[in-house]
Length: 136
Image (cartoon, rainbow, N blue to C red):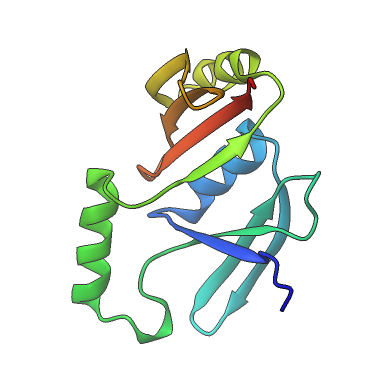
């Protein structure tokens, strides 16, 4: 069986702020931005990976109760939900670009013992976003 990744999702509290960060700061392409069943289907992806889409979706969807949505937004604000890791050929340059845009730094660039140089940020919703450069 051969499978490949098509979509991954991040919960966001404001899709417009998320779009500005992922498109304007990180340079990702908008793949979809449409109204869909009482929600907005918003996806972005790296230019170099046209087959991959990252959904920037507000919690709840068509089935979510207001209590579910409020719980998810609290977890998002605490920064305890999983994030994503991007590869880059120059983590230091990318760190300068993203920090200059005002993103919250969680880790400055550092060489890790497992073969990458990486750094970390929180996106406008609180998601953990990491950037790695392969060093070995």
